[in-house]
Image (cartoon, rainbow, N blue to C red; front, side, top):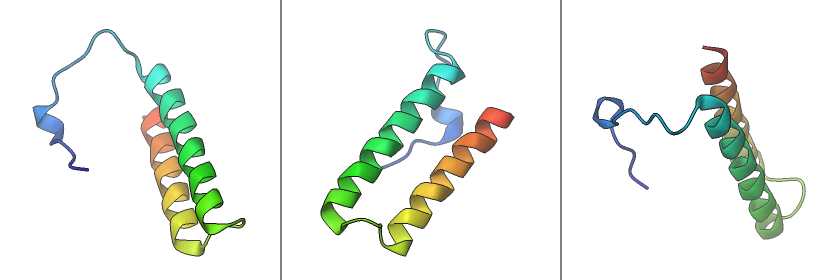
Length: 64
């Protein structure tokens, strides 16, 4: 997966951040479920920490 640079992303007036935030949260939950099926429950430390860091960053973006 290759991320685009922030300055190369054009504005989109059809979506708002609330909608994007909740969709990202649902996607993270789905990824967590798939990882638990693959690795077992509880998740290994590295995948769990990476999911938590991504969730924290989403919360920081929402706070801004």
